[in-house]
Image 1: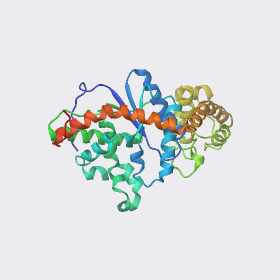
Image 2 (image 1 turned 90 degrees about the vertical axis):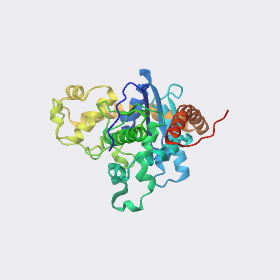
Image 3 (image 1 turned 120 degrees about the vertical axis):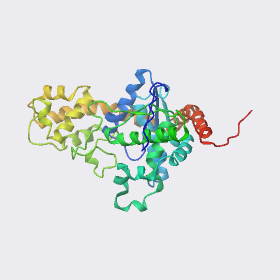
Image 4 (image 1 turned 60 degrees about the vertical axis):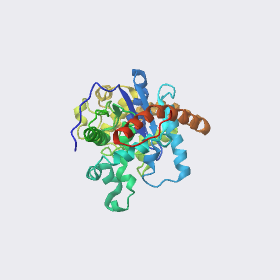
Length: 347
């Protein structure tokens, strides 16, 4: 792969991230992404947040379901604290630079890079030749999502670092191939105690909206009783909480619940263990459930309010798309000039 071109001072700080509209969003999405997205608005940095519906169709989607879930993700963004006036919130398919730059970057990226991507191997499985071409090229489109805005930072979980590394490789190869210093080398933003929330049924696996078991996750649309029941049934072990964080090293299920509590309470895992040292899970789980309900309840209520007005959500996404296009369109035009494409120019 190409060596990254280091241009640390050439680009203003700009954050981009996206969430795919496929399945209900979870507590993991909130703690690992949405909560942090909202906090970034207070740092005086330009932020763009996207519902990546083009990525969703790399596997077949029912059209009505795709529209519903796109609005649901938009509602979750807003209910979690994303202000459409302070951040740019839109859905990917409304901004043409994603698809057009995606094609250009498809011609820069190498097929071997795509086959090495862990996500493709996981999703395609043993029957990879029957997967869509879009699924194979998914990481190249993700690179286009980021580079269409010359984003410098991308909030991601640990499991997405490989995609950011590939984006850097693609950007570096484009810069090298065309002898330009055009694209930045985006950096992953990975921070906080719960950047990777694990399954309630298996503390070694990520909490996922695509897990077949609804008991493995807390959905942002779950009511208080459902949240409490899921936490009460969450997998743990027979030992009480230890007196130090080191005591959780070989206890992934217990460590997961401690991490979730820490993220919800704004504490470190070490502080949680110190406060609850010696507690049995019969005591700790109700405390965690109360904290989760207090956090998720207002988000669920606001999502329900927003989803009752789908036209308003569509209008918000439309306004965001116009703002996003105003940034991406000139960058796309510059890329086309660099590549050698002829464009009509209005005089």
